[in-house]
Image 1 (cartoon, helix red, strand yellow):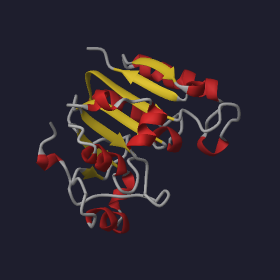
Image 2 (cartoon, helix red, strand yellow):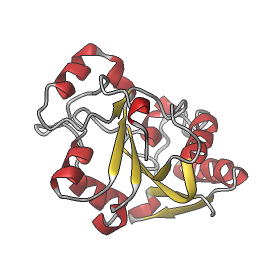
Image 3 (tube, one colour):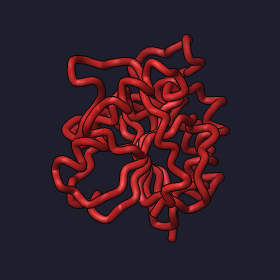
Image 4 (cartoon, helix red, strand yellow):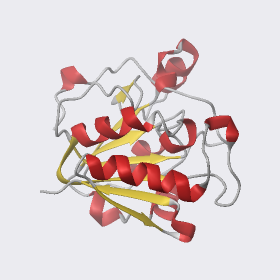
Length: 199
């Protein structure tokens, strides 16, 4: 359990995506292949949670007993904070942070989720920083699910310094394995990166 004094209840938000503002439980289930049952009783870190904590709010509305901590670097901006803190269903577990510098104690989370966030907006070189942080805050026996690995599996994306899909998978795998994490790529076209921390 994350102590209340470690949760900055005055931070939240990012760019509105669609009329509902962000990715919700259905998107996480479909794109990360998670099951509601595996969330029960877990402490979950949602990296790059979107503008309205939609996933965390929908977990609560669905009656799933788990604690979701929502993280976004955009929460430092007043415009985004105001949007979330004025919602009547705000979970008050939002933190302004980046995956490369997570403000949590070691071994804090059972499950880390990142959908259209960490992998999408980081270069492979930055993986040197977010991978060790994910490893540090993940509990032994915990998992991290990040997707998509790359927007295109056939074309390089020079904007973010990615060479190719296969090269990116190799770079991530090498870095993760060197930290002692188990690595697998799942789903359609292997677009889901699963990291598992041994017990």
